[in-house]
Image 1 (spheres, rainbow, N blue to C red):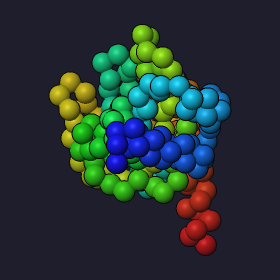
Image 2: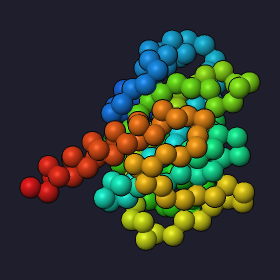
Image 3: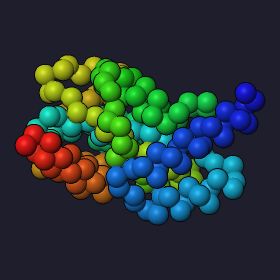
Length: 176
């Protein structure tokens, strides 16, 4: 497969995951369709990790962005889901299966000097007894979902909370 064909396969995977995402923010699906017609900025992928009680979330302390979900840039030739799992492992030491349905698709700029790009959020459920390990100068920690945390993306708090409530409701339905 040529480099262009690989890039197209990856883009097709991103489009498919964006369409499957539970939540859409910032007109992400329409943005992605329009962006497919031009060279795209790198995609971003992150993981919303909650505990089985859906009361806590894992965040990492980014030097500029504050406390954010573990994630980063999708590398050339890498599927967004694979990138999310890789970033999760690199930034928290967690190696876990991501839930089948992506949590969200959003459009944002991750740096003031970068153009907005698509960010895909995946979800995982991990026990709080699993130890966290992190990159130097970028600690990872569990935060209560009902607490505030300092982030340049304050809208993430309610988005992650809403998704945790949805997962918890699904758990409650599935347990009966």
